[in-house]
Length: 168
Image (cartoon, rainbow, N blue to C red; front, top):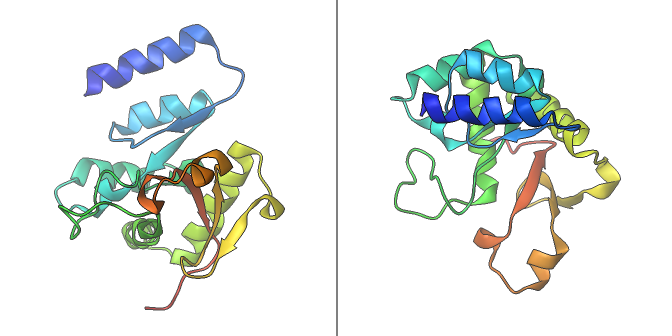
């Protein structure tokens, strides 16, 4: 895995992109995370951090600045711990946020506020571009083409940006 991430980084450096992006489903080292952020990329953190055995990744998400993290679920793929064998859902990004907050020793509100700002900055979106869904306690910006194509919620790719969380 390390070698493939290093090859991606080498290619990105060679092409000198004008804009960054997301290192989706990041599972690399702290050094690799730092290299992605130098290139303008945010680090996409998902359900992998919910697994106790993911100690290296858990250490990385504590060490990198929160300003460099985006939350993701990769729904319907990559289930969170406790949901193995089930399709993942976008709403479970709240559980990723809760896990990240616990690992960093900060409030889930702080995680939500900063990762919302990170996504807004990276994707050049504002709150007026987002659609509030109170059942998910989130804002979601979904591709209209996907929504209109008749795909199910689990297949629709969305950017979920959490604004507030339920008190469970």
